[in-house]
Amino acid sequence: MDQKLRNADAPGVKSAVRAMSGYTLVQPDCPVKLNQNECPFDVPAELKREIVDEALASNWGRYPSFVPGEVKAAIGERHGLGPEHVLIGNGSNELIQSIFQAAVSTGDAVVLPAPTFTLYALMGRISGAEIRTVHLKRDLSFDVDRLEEESAQSDVRLVVLCSPNNPTGSMISPEDTARIADATAGLVVVDEAYFEFVGVSCIELLERHPNLVITRTFSKALGAAGLRLGYLVADPAVARELEKVKLPYNVNIISLIAARKLIGQDALIEERASMIRSERQRVFEALRGLPGIKPHPSHANFILFEAERPVAGIFHGLIERGVLIRDVSRYPMLERGMRVTIGLPEENDAFLEALREVLATQD
Ligand code: PMP
Image 1 (cartoon, helix red, strand yellow):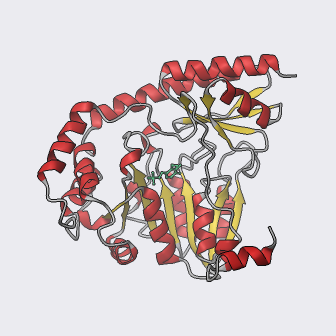
Image 2 (tube, protein in one colour):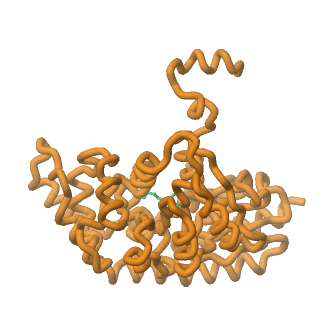
């Protein structure tokens, strides 16, 4: 479309936004859905019932309490921290947005590894930031020396590290994260959305590195993506500033009840995460045995794999067989990349079977 016409269609929208293509997702209806790194298990019915009963007994005509102190305390306690370290979000993505709003002004620099979760670059562009990209190494590990070097530049306000990283499944160690936090005068966000599948966290670093902010979500191992719940932990001084930016009453009363009920479900979470980890190993081995397919080791609930053949044919061949995964071939470095979420054993089998068929039928 003609640029002038496009601008006229959206009068008043800033050019940084008009220039963006936006976060979109093509989602054909497939019975086997392994494209969004969701949990294959729903919240157990009895827990749902408890949440709904409590929601029914509450007054929906009132706003939630100004500070959801009880939920903040329950989350903080899990990490040996007081509620003053915790903010709760309508999904962790909302909190990441608040961090960008609080930390980044037009012209500031933001350091991002690549490839990584696309939301960070989107937020950076909306903030008018200059994005400094540090590519992963060829084996998809983080280039810690270069990240440290770039993060040390005086105009850097924010560094975002996703660990385990979406879509590669690779991770950065707490020691290397600490190096980057020491090197920069900006904030360092560690997005630990996939924490439960690896068990390694940077939260313990907070005490000595007050410029760290760690985000977590209820959308992955906790199986509650539909409720939109996430949280961050930070130094109390940083949390206080971020609180000013976050919208008041951002999390609704039903989700707050659910957060309180779900956060203590350690046995359930571990049982599910451990099933995903063993299925991940099984799917990885199976992929490794397929001709022209190279899976990358993963610490998350998905596997990135590359194919010798063009991605489009494989991706659509899988859709025709009722299996939806994610085509990540437009991410930097991943021209032959696809990402499959680890699902239930039967879903993983359906994926592997469909992939075998697709590989056998194409030339
Ligand atoms: N961070 C990363 C790296 C993710 O991949 C995802 C899921 N797409 C999220 C966060 C989820 O965010 P939310 O808590 O808003 O569901």
